[in-house]
Amino acid sequence: MNFITLKDLTPKEMKHLIERAIEIKKLFQENPISYMQEYGGILKNKSLLMIFEKPSLRTHLSFSVAMAQLGGNAVYYSAKDSYLGTKETMYDTAKTASRFVDIIMARLYHHSMMEELAEYATVPVINGMTDFVHPCQVLGDLMTILEIRGRLQGIKLAYVGDGYNNTTHSLLYGCSRIGVDIAVGCPKGEEYSPMPKVVKEAKKFAQESGSKVEIFHDAESAVKGADIVYTDSWMSYHVPKEKEAERVKIFEPFKVTQRLMSLAEPGANFMHCLPAWREHEQTAEVIDGPQSIVFDQAENRLHIQKTIILKLLGKL
Image (cartoon, rainbow, N blue to C red; front, side, top):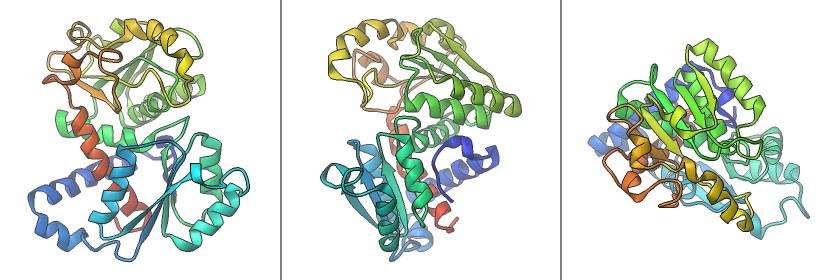
């Protein structure tokens, strides 16, 4: 079993992972002794390989600390310093690594490489992020929403900004799968909008879960009536630096300001998967204000990673 995209999970499986992550977090924070007795050595002598092509703070820290708090070991491997994709194939990498470790997490540029890794590895593979999706992030986001709002069904999440990125795609899959309404507000054009195939699949999932998927090309329409307002970087890793000025101009109408937040439901929360570019994707007033739960999101990456690892290793 692997963890590659949220569309591969049933609503029941997603709900189970989220609820168990909340339980594990609560035990860890409120009763450390009981936590250590139940989970502190559960992955003794188990090793996680972490392959990084893309830089990371939250993914690196959350997986490393998760393994430590489960009694296991995490090994960092920078693909920039390797022969991966040049002298050595992904097939050989997957087969070799599987002889040394019990589970692999990879953060890669190309989703096709992730699929190849998952196909040839003989141990479970976790998608730590690709150019297509960011499933660990969004599963942790849904955990955060359930913690803060007390429910998922009937919640509306509005995503505004760059629609053509991995977080947007995973939000579309995750929200539609589990019953959260999602409205995306992004500029017109293929370069800024979610992939049509993702929108099509998400709308199919929404029919099954009773939720709604909407795509708008202005921020106000998307945010109206939202319980959660979410944004992400305007300069994803794949975007060349020379496009920055042009993109800032294009995305300026989608900046999350206090005025935009006022169009959402009273008491709506603000989310950002980080790193955040203050005064661009959102104002400092919003991200540092009382409606912001971005650091709850960040913290929950730790607990959702634990749950994913335990599930894939048959410990949950």
